Amino acid sequence: MMLRVKPPLPYDQQLNRFKERGLIVGDDSEAIEILKRVSYYRLTAYALTFKNNDIFTPGTTFETIYRHYEFDSKLRNILMEIIEHVEIAFRTHIAHEIAHNFGPLGYQNPSHFRNLINHETFINELTKSIDKSKDPFIEWHRTRYQGQFPSWVAFEVLTFSSISMLFKNLLLDNQKSIAKTFYRGLDYTLISNWLHLLSVVRNRCAHYSRLFNQSLNLDIKFRSIDRNLDITNRTLFAVIFNLKYLIKDRTWITWVTKLETLIAEYREVDIRLLGFNEDWHRLLEKK
Image (cartoon, rainbow, N blue to C red; front, side, top):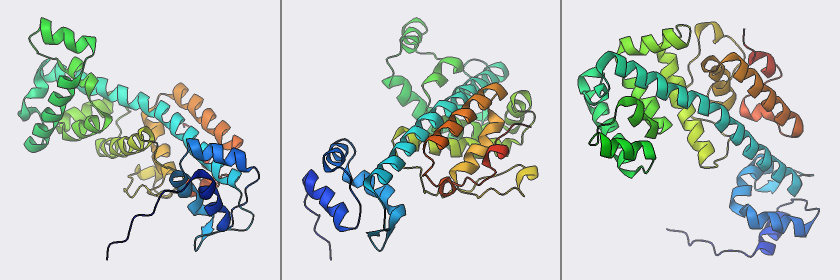
């Protein structure tokens, strides 16, 4: 039998619902102001960590829940910042690889890719993105070159998900060339796996989805030398760990410092629920 949708609650009743379940609220007015900006439903996702049979663990405060929400928000922001480096780099790598091997419009030829169906999907998505784009460089090529877009122009409108799928569909020689030229000969299958995972994380960040205490539900591949390390698969930390192999040293060191600062600011957050262990900082060091 279909359940009836619950009626909406005013902000004060939302707060009372928290209290009825054992949450300690120090300042009702401040809590209601937070509920006006961050929905009750969104906060309940962070509250799950502190509940047992829908009752809060004794001593849990509204501030604790909100601090975890703040941590997650700031973590998403710095992740978007570092993933941007990978996204832009692979746009550049793939555009250059295709153009110099097959010509400026070589991406249009399905014979330059592994899977014809995947290539067709890619072309359809690219066409939609170009048609929607109002960027000056797209308008310029639309009028000046009769709608012919070389790879280095066309790929600027691709989403990270499309970039990930495009790399996966490159011919083996082209995948290996990118890996050898820019990533010290990393296994191209690892790069493909990591790009997919990063696109998933990036989309979660872009849509403000929760990262804290959330499994990725995707298998993460590791270099053979890293497989015996104490890193839990399907966790955010596992993605971050492998991310270091795709980032330039100085940029990575700066970003890890930001991560360290964030974790220090929110010491009450149990980062083990994100896959971090006590040795996380050493694991993120570049050798």
